[in-house]
Length: 468
Image (cartoon, rainbow, N blue to C red; front, side, top):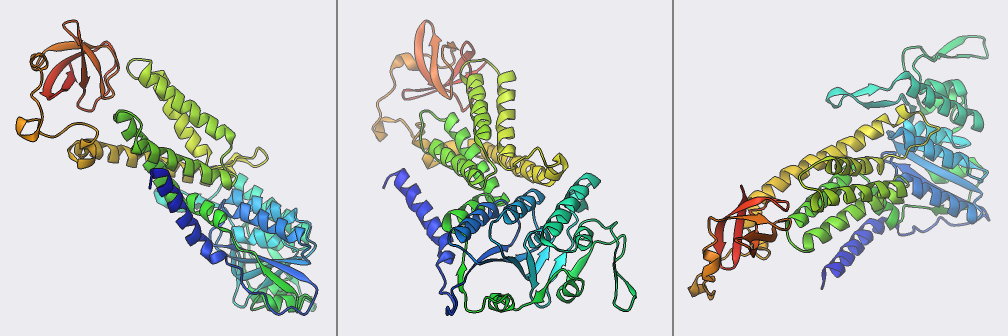
């Protein structure tokens, strides 16, 4: 089996494993001509949820859904993804959308709930605590600036206003400066939320203050509450492609793909020809950009920037001597393409909103680069002694007893002599000694044309040189 078949088999296995949870569940007994679709917003609010939500809404609308239930269980996530999911839900043409909070809609999850026309909560549920935060010094989470808070507050207000939810409660989820009061039928004033604290409501309080309409223990009970008893229930779960995209775009996996890709390409450049390291590096980078593209983060401009970086670095290595502006610009373009591929910027959204995402992307890239440098140094130290590397560069004894013929006398005479490189040595190439061209290799370094080198070792027909 060749390398490509191995890759196909591996990807198929991953797809099968990730897709096993998507096998359709049997629907409840149908005693009504109504159709209800259920989608899930669970775990961290991250880019992989967007294509899944779009597909679920499209499928539900195409099949004439009478109602859509969004089952929510989340502690929040990225602000930019939160607003995109909110837009997708509020643009839906399905008339009845119900947020079923089972059991938490914290932070970004609260806006997802407000983006539905109706809110139902499971017993002992909670909703709120949506003040935007981002990693500060030492990794400690700190509150975002006033511009981000203002943006989030207006997003919550707009969603609540559009769907008939209490706007003061919605804004109090975000802004601790908002005070919420209610007047009872008896004329008593009750403070729901004091200034200085962000509002979070339990199931009973959310119903009491008019945010949630009902309490329900499961989807079937939600249907009963809205006159949909006996309706056909269609559970829409992420398919294997959406699971794979969500897997590839997680911070840890993205960092591993970048590290492996950079390290493999570096190894390929250090060895002659195009072999396994180049193949692995190409696949890793394709998976990195492909995953970001599927979830809607990476665009063609990011790929163009990446290609430009590769071209500039190639020009620096193969055409221009030394290391100068082309190399610096190339590396900058590569780093920029990696970061941009993980953040989708919209001009209508304040740049401050993207600070957490940019910090996260920068951390992923930084960790990947440092890991690549460290692992690369280790490999260059120990790899030449390994069995795998010996296939690329002759490292065995070249004695008559092992079947090798003694080197021609004229190569032996080059030991210690000085020559001039006529081609780039990466690490192999050609030098000129006493007007005679000689094929040589370095000890692992790059040496540009026109440099003086000294022959330091001769093994069989392998001539090793070092810059002087």
